Image (cartoon, rainbow, N blue to C red; front, side):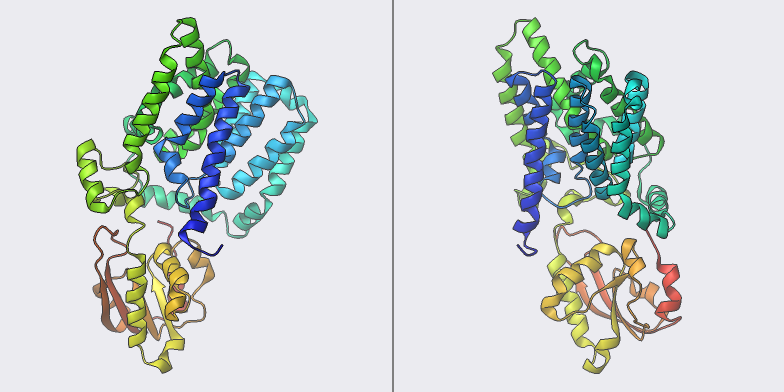
Length: 438
């Protein structure tokens, strides 16, 4: 299917649709009637964070948390210990996708130790744990070979990018990410899994949720890290609300609640999907008096949310790099490196640069650092994201070859594209100092 926007977003949309269906099925397995299933599904379908993750490729997509919770419910409800094998496979895939799966796994273990310790007497749970490790073995081996570098990346992100942690902001952001009307649903979900008689057998899930909250609080985690744990909580909350409406003989409220969810979700949809042009989005933000959630220092003061601005300006940036590349004499191009200050700039060159005949980019940022300088020495470098003043410290000659100025694009897209000649020390000697994970 190539690398078109449709091909990238098609599978994400399928994942989002699957998460919606799985949340409804989870509500059904918890004893929920059609209304509970519909409320749970609608809560996930229109939650801004899941709409966002179902639209563009991002590390925030973690459906395996919900798959594991779905299997855990069946294990605890029907005493089907063999399902621990599938739980292990799902957990292993989740760990391959994102290491934060460890948070959920730790929470589940803690919840079982406190409420269903007998599960650990079964050989199936240990077999499932072994399967999880086997599936995740490639990433574990890579981490071991690279000195568990993800821990270093997390430390740098916390020290350089992360905003100071505020418990109030953490929970207010949960309200925004999951949709304002979902607040009573997931609060009811916490009640369902921790207190209610119906959900008592599934207390391990409620404890797992609280364990993840505690870990993120202690580690200054970003608010959206908790999002993957919400679908099962929303499913439990939908079941609990359905029970309360039955008890209060207020079944007539059911269609009103579903309609309110749909209307409110559509009303907030422009803040999660790029359905408006940037000028229209700014007007809409002013109408809502909300300008997007802030997770990092770079998000502060942006005209539009960074998850939208990050979609803007990449073709223009690569075109500017191509203009700079064409200014280099043909005989010198084979030794001309394209050095990007961050992985997004480098990836844009790698993805879009082939139409201009550009070579692969290099960068000291994130995984690009491990791939090295690709044999370049620094005789000639096209620099992206570096100021001419800073480049003059190591370059014999610095020339501004192009300037990128795209409205609403982020700072790491806009700015000068420079040509650096005769880098000293050489690029290979300088490479260890370029490593950066923030």
